[in-house]
Amino acid sequence: MLINVPHTSRKFFLATLLTHTMLGKRRASSWERLLCRYLCEKKVVHFHRPYKVKLFLANGKTITYEPDIQIGGNIIIEPHGIIDKITTFHGECPTMKIILITKNDHIPQIPNEAYDEIIPIEYFDMLETALKRMRRKQH
Ligand SMILES: [Zn+2]
Image (cartoon, rainbow, N blue to C red; front, side):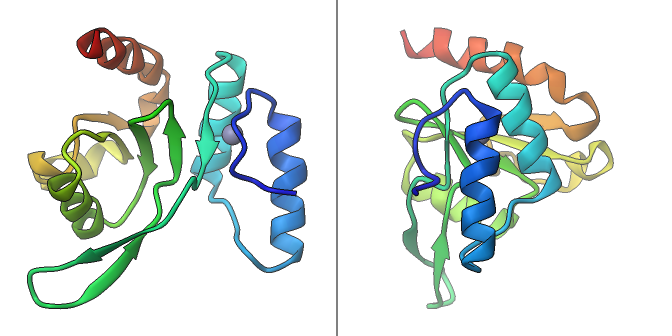
């Protein structure tokens, strides 16, 4: 069973997640599960970890970036990701739109280049409006 299948069913996600966890392939953070539930309730079709990309940092290091949640072709939702990775990815793939979810207190420390929208986890319900705003911009 693959986890990176588009869905609006939380049951489906939890079932596939269980398989993956048992296989030791991956775990989902509580924020990722929370966002999955939210998106399913709102009937927003989304994927979890759709792919991995290799990125080359300025210091010569190579890193792998795996978007947490993707909606449609180009919207990524990243709950508490590693900011360096996300900023590099965003710089190299400017057509991808990133919604960063973080703690309200951390927002001032995050560079603007890292995201298109930023939402405090404490008010994650703002996600629906942010998605609508982004989709409107695309048309
Ligand atoms: Zn999901």
